[in-house]
Image (cartoon, rainbow, N blue to C red):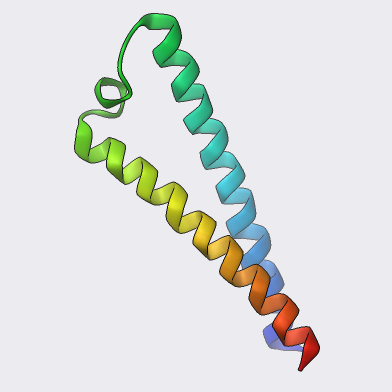
Length: 76
């Protein structure tokens, strides 16, 4: 039962982090659109823009993986 609780906690925290990151990324898009800038300028360069995308992708994979582990642990 301890592993299942840990998996649930990891899923909750990763999903909340994903929601916060997506909201910040959307706000970045609104800011860029209103002030006529590019996301690369606001993030500090292309490298950091790619890191922003990578963070979103990794949080998505963590959320999916932890969600799958919750349901697979219940079936065993």
